Image (tube, rainbow, N blue to C red; front, side):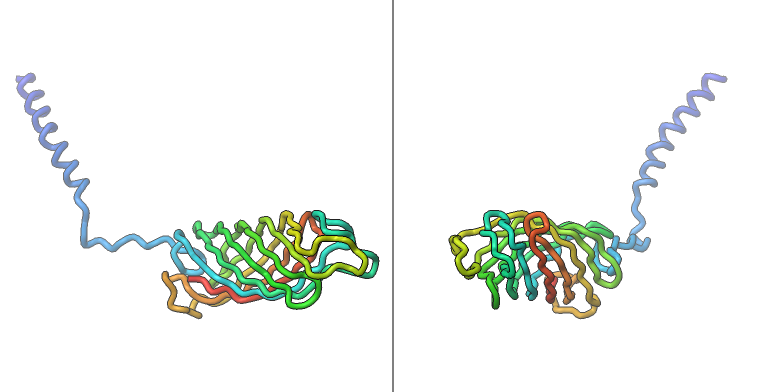
Length: 210
C-alpha cells in the first residue's frame, strides 16, 4: 500500500511540473510595457546622437618654440580669431556619454591660417539637455604670419595633442525635426590648450544635434 502511494505521488509530480512551467512561461499581453530607460534630459538612455556645430573664438600660442613652431620675440604672439566647423557624434550611456568629432577652423584675423583635428569626448548629462565634458585629441596648425625676421615654413603643419573642457546647454524642446527624438540646439562653451598648455583657446558656438 505504501509503495502504491509513493508511485501515485511521483506520477502527480511528473504531470504538475510541466504544467507549472508552462504557466510560468506564459506572457500576459495585457500587462503594461516596462518604462524605457531614459537619460536625465528625458531622451533615450542609449543610442547614437550625431551633431554638427559652428564655433567662433580666439587662440594665442606661447612665444617659445612649441611643437616646432618658431619661437617669437618678446612682445609678439602668434594669435588670431577663428571660425570652426565641427561634425561628430555622441553615444549616450545613461547619465554619461562618450563621443568623437572632427573639426576644421579658419583664421579670420591675426596669424593663424588653418587648423584641423580629431578629438574624443566623455562626460555626463545633466538637466534638460546639458552636457559637461572633457576632450582630448590631436590638431594640426598652419600660420600665414610670423614675427618679422623669424625663420619658418608658413605652409608646414605644426601638430600636437589638445586637451579641453566644456559644457553644452539648451532646452530639449527647441526641436529641429531631426532623425531621432533627441534633436535640438545647444549652446557650447569650451576652453582648450595645445601641446601641454602652450596655448589658450576659448570658443563658443551653437550645436545642432539630431
